[in-house]
Length: 109
Image 1 (cartoon, rainbow, N blue to C red):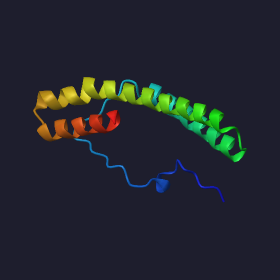
Image 2: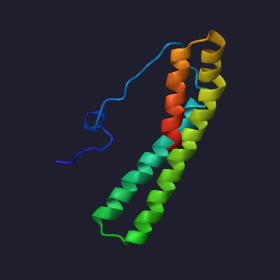
Image 3: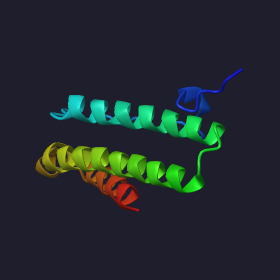
């Protein structure tokens, strides 16, 4: 029996979804493509571990996945600033601004 680490039931904690305005993500397809590639790459790394591939090679591949995820995050962050943060500022929604700032802070950790 194989466990799918990407299954939502295997997440440590549920991810809260908060939507207080219509979300518009102009780069959605780009982000989804990058995430799909990163997931495929990560599955390949899992196979490398199972096949006892040299640790240095695995670390290099993990670094590539981390970079891919960071790049997807940068695209989302740009959309976030250009749309969500601007909307929150224009509407004067201080609670939304606080949530958005918190999300940015967590991404930048």
